[in-house]
Length: 261
Image (cartoon, rainbow, N blue to C red; front, side, top):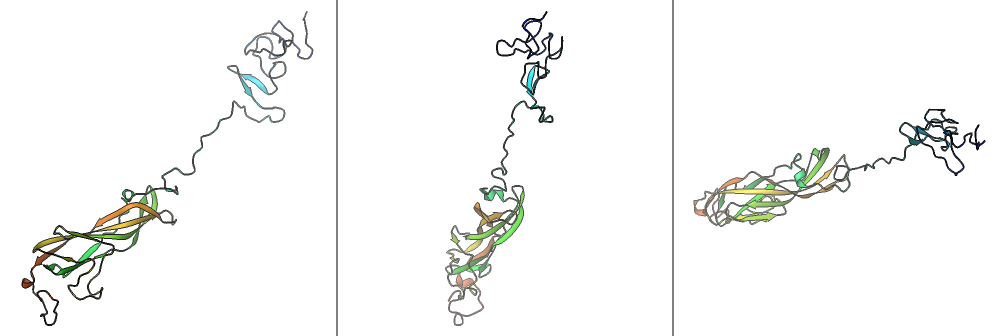
């Protein structure tokens, strides 16, 4: 005969039932007994007589799983908790899409600047003590190629010209100069890029042009490259001698400023 029968729960203390008199249920997975639930000798689960909240049951291993409200959302998958996926930035720093990307001249290994050329007057020879004019050909240009793994364009603009005259001296100019004729000057005039040699001999004159560079991806805005790109030209070999040994086409009356006059 059943004692202390609870009409609402359908179980009684003892005999594997649930004691609801204490105000809470004590339910253990795998407990055998009689009364409502999964039956005698079975694993207790489900709702109703299990003593668990509606929509919560036991799964193997005794872990309570919230299945949601089966009456209103039977297709809601079980939930063991909220999992937050890691936030991946839309653009990784220091990649082509980064608006604050810093590009240095060392990154331009696949996009070189054009090599400048240089000339001198007189061509291949010079007179000691008289100005020799030097000039360079270098202009702004754009080259395309891979930059940091993406197609890009780089614009090079010459900003500095440095001549090494081969006699231990040098000169730096903001421009490449020009021939005497293009500057509207007579021969052997002094120019911003001319030089006066003091000794005879064979000289090798070198030129290095420094370019400021800008880059852009996919036709976007031009952005500066950090540093200058230094590109040397081919050297010029010239013979320096005194005026008395230099052959000239004009006499001093025709050209008073000619060599030796």
